[in-house]
Length: 361
Image: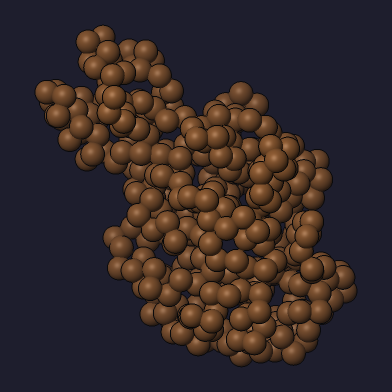
């Protein structure tokens, strides 16, 4: 039997083309697409204005690929982490982070990661597979469904591709999911409130800069010298800091938008005053800000979180040198907080290899 089409991974144009293959007018594709992406339908029976014969044909040729919410952890600070199971039994994570009226969701783009950042637990697994566009988008829909039950009327306001995986390594699914999630008939998220984080895949950054739909860009820098970055982020050996910054200076920014640099603070590795001064020199004259992120500990990593005093000294020195630097307070320390730890625990329970990810979220 032929593989069914996952409607959740189709753009509107693709959905319209699909129903035409079934002998239906294009507007039926728009109707169905809106049910899937705008109204959160998880079955064809919910599509009340679609004829029964068409629903029957859809059931034969298509599916609505919904992730399974396997576990929800709730932190005392309001953060919620969801472990989601894919159709092939893989565990991924998404996190909801409240901040006043703002509610940010951190989503995953891959199962595992290929880039081997040394402070990142997911690197222990390597890349298992890319998530398809429907699996990326459905993380938003599962989270929104949870909110509908627990906080009716609350909506996701900001979206960050900072969970498991390197989004720019899964470029096709990234772009397609952005198109789906920003469409007015779907989740209708503002591209100005979507951020894509990367470790610095230079060709993909340059390619993203040429897209019509351009999200905010965050770069996981984490070092002020090639020597240190080579050691903790092997991607730097291919695209060193100077080449990365060259691509970022050329990245087209709309008015009042800045590139965000993420800097995970590791005790005794990248948290000295000298590091702070080098960082300020590297980034001066760029339209940017720096998020300082105290490392989120996880088992098996040879690092430590700096003391509060060391973090404060680092931030103050960077700010004295004219760089906008913000401290990202660790969230959800009481619920397997580092990205991927919840999925990792599930993998260990199943006797699989270590699965976990970066401390970025």
